Image 1 (cartoon, one colour):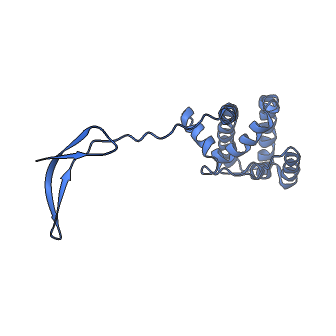
Image 2: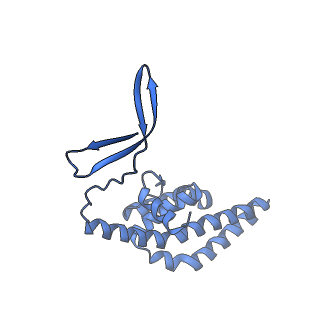
Length: 182
Protein backbone atom coordinates (compact mmCIF):
# COMPACT_ATOMS: atom_id res chain seq x y z
CA UNK A 1 0.00 0.00 0.00
CA UNK A 2 1.40 3.43 -0.90
CA UNK A 3 0.44 6.72 0.66
CA UNK A 4 1.11 9.93 -1.13
CA UNK A 5 1.47 13.10 0.90
CA UNK A 6 1.87 16.61 -0.48
CA UNK A 7 3.33 19.26 1.82
CA UNK A 8 2.79 22.93 1.18
CA UNK A 9 6.30 23.79 2.33
CA UNK A 10 7.90 21.34 -0.08
CA UNK A 11 7.67 20.90 -3.81
CA UNK A 12 8.35 17.16 -3.85
CA UNK A 13 5.76 14.49 -3.14
CA UNK A 14 6.79 12.27 -0.25
CA UNK A 15 6.00 8.58 -0.60
CA UNK A 16 5.93 6.16 2.33
CA UNK A 17 5.75 2.39 2.32
CA UNK A 18 3.21 1.18 4.88
CA UNK A 19 4.69 -1.74 6.78
CA UNK A 20 1.64 -2.78 8.76
CA UNK A 21 -1.60 -1.66 10.32
CA UNK A 22 -1.92 -1.63 14.07
CA UNK A 23 -5.26 -1.47 15.87
CA UNK A 24 -5.22 0.19 19.30
CA UNK A 25 -8.50 0.62 21.22
CA UNK A 26 -10.49 0.27 18.02
CA UNK A 27 -8.41 2.87 16.15
CA UNK A 28 -6.31 1.80 13.18
CA UNK A 29 -2.81 3.23 12.86
CA UNK A 30 -0.59 2.80 9.85
CA UNK A 31 3.00 2.00 10.79
CA UNK A 32 5.59 3.35 8.35
CA UNK A 33 9.36 3.63 8.17
CA UNK A 34 10.59 7.18 7.82
CA UNK A 35 13.88 8.26 6.37
CA UNK A 36 16.46 9.49 8.84
CA UNK A 37 16.53 13.26 8.86
CA UNK A 38 19.56 15.29 9.81
CA UNK A 39 18.72 18.56 11.48
CA UNK A 40 20.95 21.40 10.52
CA UNK A 41 20.53 24.50 12.59
CA UNK A 42 22.01 27.90 12.13
CA UNK A 43 25.75 27.88 12.44
CA UNK A 44 26.90 29.71 15.51
CA UNK A 45 28.99 32.73 14.76
CA UNK A 46 32.61 32.04 15.52
CA UNK A 47 33.74 33.92 18.55
CA UNK A 48 37.43 34.57 18.11
CA UNK A 49 37.91 35.51 21.77
CA UNK A 50 36.42 32.18 22.89
CA UNK A 51 38.63 30.30 20.45
CA UNK A 52 41.74 32.09 21.72
CA UNK A 53 40.75 31.44 25.35
CA UNK A 54 40.17 27.74 24.64
CA UNK A 55 43.47 27.41 22.72
CA UNK A 56 45.25 29.00 25.71
CA UNK A 57 43.48 26.56 28.06
CA UNK A 58 44.62 23.63 25.88
CA UNK A 59 48.20 24.92 26.03
CA UNK A 60 48.01 25.39 29.81
CA UNK A 61 46.56 21.92 30.41
CA UNK A 62 49.23 20.36 28.17
CA UNK A 63 51.87 22.12 30.25
CA UNK A 64 50.45 21.36 33.73
CA UNK A 65 49.05 17.84 33.32
CA UNK A 66 52.38 15.97 33.09
CA UNK A 67 53.47 17.55 36.39
CA UNK A 68 50.20 16.51 38.05
CA UNK A 69 50.55 12.94 36.76
CA UNK A 70 54.15 12.83 37.92
CA UNK A 71 53.20 14.25 41.32
CA UNK A 72 50.61 11.51 41.79
CA UNK A 73 53.11 8.84 40.75
CA UNK A 74 55.86 10.19 43.01
CA UNK A 75 53.44 10.50 45.91
CA UNK A 76 52.42 6.87 45.46
CA UNK A 77 56.08 5.79 45.46
CA UNK A 78 56.81 7.83 48.57
CA UNK A 79 53.79 6.31 50.33
CA UNK A 80 54.93 2.79 49.44
CA UNK A 81 58.45 3.45 50.66
CA UNK A 82 57.22 5.05 53.89
CA UNK A 83 54.94 2.07 54.55
CA UNK A 84 57.99 -0.22 54.55
CA UNK A 85 59.84 1.91 57.11
CA UNK A 86 59.20 1.48 60.81
CA UNK A 87 61.59 3.99 62.33
CA UNK A 88 60.28 7.60 62.49
CA UNK A 89 63.81 9.01 62.09
CA UNK A 90 64.25 7.01 58.86
CA UNK A 91 60.92 8.32 57.57
CA UNK A 92 61.88 11.95 58.28
CA UNK A 93 65.29 11.51 56.64
CA UNK A 94 63.69 9.83 53.62
CA UNK A 95 61.11 12.63 53.24
CA UNK A 96 63.85 15.27 53.51
CA UNK A 97 65.90 13.52 50.82
CA UNK A 98 62.85 13.03 48.56
CA UNK A 99 61.90 16.70 48.90
CA UNK A 100 65.45 17.82 48.07
CA UNK A 101 65.47 15.57 45.00
CA UNK A 102 62.11 16.87 43.82
CA UNK A 103 63.19 20.48 44.31
CA UNK A 104 66.39 19.91 42.39
CA UNK A 105 64.54 18.21 39.54
CA UNK A 106 61.45 20.43 39.20
CA UNK A 107 61.86 23.76 40.99
CA UNK A 108 63.09 25.75 37.98
CA UNK A 109 60.52 24.22 35.64
CA UNK A 110 57.65 24.94 38.03
CA UNK A 111 58.84 28.51 38.56
CA UNK A 112 58.41 29.04 34.80
CA UNK A 113 54.71 28.12 34.84
CA UNK A 114 52.33 31.00 34.30
CA UNK A 115 49.83 31.86 37.02
CA UNK A 116 47.03 30.21 35.05
CA UNK A 117 49.11 27.06 34.57
CA UNK A 118 49.83 27.02 38.31
CA UNK A 119 46.14 27.31 39.08
CA UNK A 120 45.35 24.47 36.69
CA UNK A 121 48.17 22.41 38.24
CA UNK A 122 46.61 22.77 41.72
CA UNK A 123 43.29 21.47 40.37
CA UNK A 124 44.90 18.67 38.37
CA UNK A 125 46.89 17.48 41.38
CA UNK A 126 43.54 17.04 43.15
CA UNK A 127 42.19 15.22 40.09
CA UNK A 128 45.14 12.80 40.04
CA UNK A 129 45.57 12.23 43.78
CA UNK A 130 42.16 12.87 45.30
CA UNK A 131 43.83 15.26 47.76
CA UNK A 132 44.13 19.02 47.77
CA UNK A 133 47.59 20.51 47.44
CA UNK A 134 47.10 22.00 50.92
CA UNK A 135 46.41 18.57 52.47
CA UNK A 136 49.45 17.05 50.72
CA UNK A 137 51.75 19.78 52.06
CA UNK A 138 50.19 19.39 55.50
CA UNK A 139 50.68 15.62 55.42
CA UNK A 140 54.36 15.78 54.50
CA UNK A 141 55.56 19.12 55.92
CA UNK A 142 53.09 19.94 58.67
CA UNK A 143 50.26 22.39 59.21
CA UNK A 144 52.44 25.48 59.70
CA UNK A 145 54.14 25.10 56.29
CA UNK A 146 50.84 24.28 54.63
CA UNK A 147 49.32 27.43 56.13
CA UNK A 148 52.33 29.50 55.01
CA UNK A 149 52.22 28.17 51.41
CA UNK A 150 48.45 28.58 51.32
CA UNK A 151 48.74 32.24 52.27
CA UNK A 152 51.59 32.73 49.81
CA UNK A 153 49.42 31.23 47.07
CA UNK A 154 46.50 33.49 47.97
CA UNK A 155 48.71 36.53 47.39
CA UNK A 156 48.92 35.38 43.76
CA UNK A 157 45.27 34.40 43.49
CA UNK A 158 45.67 30.65 44.10
CA UNK A 159 43.81 28.57 46.63
CA UNK A 160 45.71 25.41 47.55
CA UNK A 161 42.46 23.96 48.89
CA UNK A 162 40.85 24.02 45.42
CA UNK A 163 39.26 20.76 44.41
CA UNK A 164 38.65 19.45 40.91
CA UNK A 165 35.05 18.94 39.86
CA UNK A 166 34.80 17.40 36.36
CA UNK A 167 31.33 18.89 35.87
CA UNK A 168 32.57 22.37 36.74
CA UNK A 169 35.84 21.98 34.86
CA UNK A 170 34.24 20.34 31.83
CA UNK A 171 36.56 22.07 29.36
CA UNK A 172 39.67 20.79 31.14
CA UNK A 173 38.14 17.31 31.34
CA UNK A 174 37.32 17.44 27.61
CA UNK A 175 40.89 18.48 26.78
CA UNK A 176 42.38 15.69 28.91
CA UNK A 177 40.18 13.08 27.23
CA UNK A 178 40.84 14.52 23.78
CA UNK A 179 44.60 14.38 24.39
CA UNK A 180 44.27 10.75 25.51
CA UNK A 181 45.70 11.31 28.99
CA UNK A 182 42.78 9.73 30.80
